[in-house]
Image (cartoon, rainbow, N blue to C red; front, side, top):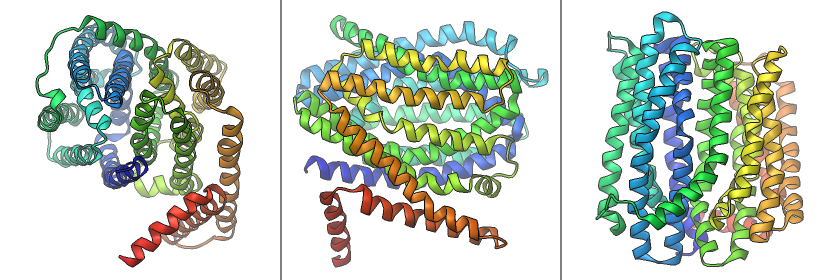
Length: 507
């Protein structure tokens, strides 16, 4: 199977997974908010975010494991691959135990003495913290197995497991309706149980299908340990800055405005995750190809994948986000029983941030493939971390809850240009062509695509809200789809679309 066909097949599999995951997740979030209430939902969101603050090194270790495992696959070196997988699993376990110890000391103190949570809910908040910490640990030690599955590009297994996971979470929501004990505590315990079960299933699947995972030796390989932790140390600055920025903003919102605003931010995060999962699937299908082609010294293919992947990521996210951006308030009112204040503007600002983020997602993968990430992570990580002191300063000066997100959006745009600088120096990427053929074209397409839906929105008044929303959605998809096809695709890509349509008609 050619690389392009494999990418297309894996993308379709992951889209199927995303449709189901999105529908279940959105419904589950609605019911969870209804059952827990705004305050408890806000507590779960902000306390879970506090645990994420202690996962700085874990996200770096995930990136390091994925890079080294995929790199060895690209070199077709089975012995080194086997050692790498065993080493990654060992290091993840050690890292998880270290984070638990640190979180128990620092996190518990911060939760009980600094967080803005009602005294009568502190016991429940502590239960949530402990369950979230253990959930994080079991998720962490599962990540090397996830990396193996993705590196082998077995996206069907990944898709089915994701569907299974959200189905279990839906079952948990229905169980909550029958529980008489504190629902927030029970919810945290049941989510923890799902994490443990998934860890067991991932281990069994990998042991059956991938030889490098069958005889795991839990010992430290000094050379691999040094390479992984060197890579991880610099990766921590970048990924850690992202986590500190996102969760730090949530904590600042809690300190300045309380848990109701955290609930609004939690809703924005849910919508963001549901929609962006479609784009992430496309990115997940391409990422291993970038690393493997770099390992094989096929730089021309790496450049092509960065540009094509970025364009299509932007198009996909624009296609999915346009109806939501236009009618955020109506969609949230139909979806949720009670829409927290600021949820609408949080959703829109989050989408703007993600649109900008799509411009450098594939550059990060290419830079990581080189292994030369020290200067990159110091620079980009430092820029992201600026969001916290700047947001704190503006909030102190009287800024409203949206201030932090505006700061994040500005710094995200700055990160695009620094990513371009590093990818040019490390893999010889052409900045001028990227700005002209990808960035400028993408914004032009977005402006053109919005014109027709905005005109229709202006003239559609005094009609049924369901008919109105359906009309706006259809017009948005139609306008965006046609604009992308006629103005955004290359001639070869248009021909590929035509061939796919003709083939389906004949079948």
